[in-house]
Image (cartoon, rainbow, N blue to C red; front, top):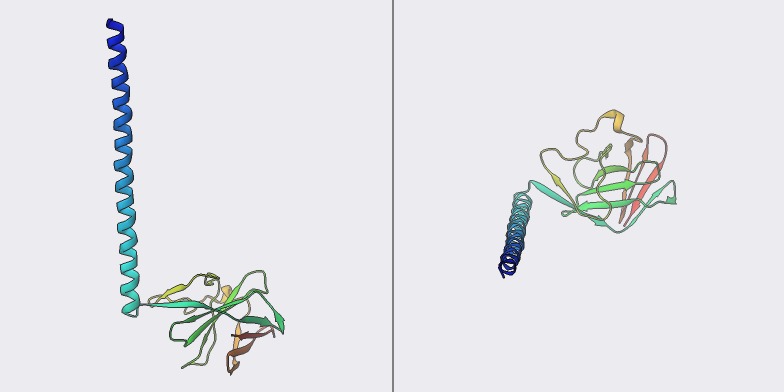
Length: 170
């Protein structure tokens, strides 16, 4: 009889530990969930604030075709929300290369060096250290020649230092 009572106490003890472990795990998961939610909300508020204040500019994917020397490539384009800047990424070489083409103001094309926007996702760009603003000469693979820049309705084209002709149509 004593053994049976002890076994029952041991079972109750084991079930209690399991109960407390499950309860503790639920609490930990609940806390982690709230932390994830709070950090996501904080990030969304920060992005919204910086966008509204003009500190962050968003570049969205533009449907179109990038050709190099008349051959279609899998290159892609992004434009800012004001449609004043085009980020043109060519993919005909071993590494993708992105050029910043302004539609208003200065008519000089900038090579973005090693930086490339993600192909399908919107690209947020901050005002403190925007890409393409400070590119080291050793990062430039094929520099654009700004004097060859030609704007046409729904397209832009220019030549590079290696003599390649880049054209973007949308």
